[in-house]
Image 1 (cartoon, rainbow, N blue to C red):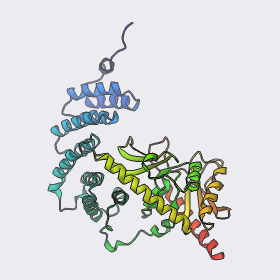
Image 2 (image 1 turned 180 degrees about the horizontal axis):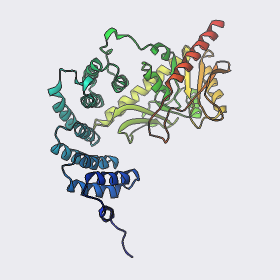
Image 3 (image 1 turned 60 degrees about the vertical axis):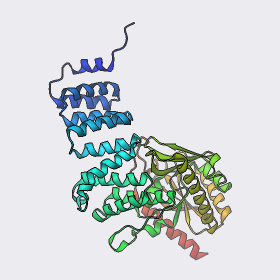
Image 4 (image 1 turned 90 degrees about the vertical axis):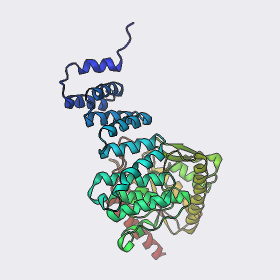
Length: 412
């Protein structure tokens, strides 16, 4: 039986009729990548890089194929080759630093970024040069991911001084606050003129997210409030939430019920085996001491568990559950009953996902101490392709819920 053709042979047959023009090669190879034919694309880019070694687009996309295959050591080699031929190419500089981090070479990435940015220090290039701004963002994130909160703080504040309204910078600063909490470190307020809180931060502080998806955590971040909550970044079904509430979150943060793993995005995530609580940490894997980090994360989980139990007993917040696609109408009331067992004054806001059967709607009372609203799903489909959150609807929903909460308290 004749063996199947190799990727090199397949590419050779595809390239027979291509003109000796790099653009033609790029078009053909891009089609292979988009079609998922990575092995043939790999062979093609290798051949094209050998034929057109001075073409920065071809050699860069050859490196991108290694990234696509998550072969980070090979990506480092390829980006080093690109940078060797094109030493001032900002894209190659940034991509090499990112590949080094993902390959576990954080120290080398730090040295590279310092080499690139030190000569540029003291100016305001982040405001005028997007490529420099991206390098500075990577530099700040790297310090945070290596656990050097003080250095990360200085780097983010330099960026905030230059580009105070940049979304990536603001999100990075807010993520640092979450990371600092994990590390039991302090983060000072950002160096912004007047240092005034975001206009809707106080509103968002009135809500305690109970998980479901991470969408409400993104909403609070968007409106300038970094909540310190056990379930803010947790994927959790309504049934498991009800069970955890009834058990008073027993076992959360204990070693025998906690698992730590590294996600495809190279982020450390934790899972509680009793309640299926999958949580983001926003800490990237850069080769740090995993045993030490695991202990820190367990301590943080226990602290946040105790804080949530205090909030549940106080009955002063609006507890918000973002219903998932698998949430059923009958799942809501058991959660509310579990909340009321802590304090009869507790209020649940269940935010459902809008659908043809239940279009988006404003806040409505469902029962005593229970409200519901409906907002379209903020997660893009298919899964893992990002977010497209309807922040305007979220703001209106939170304003309505707070007004109804205050009205009910005033009437009582």
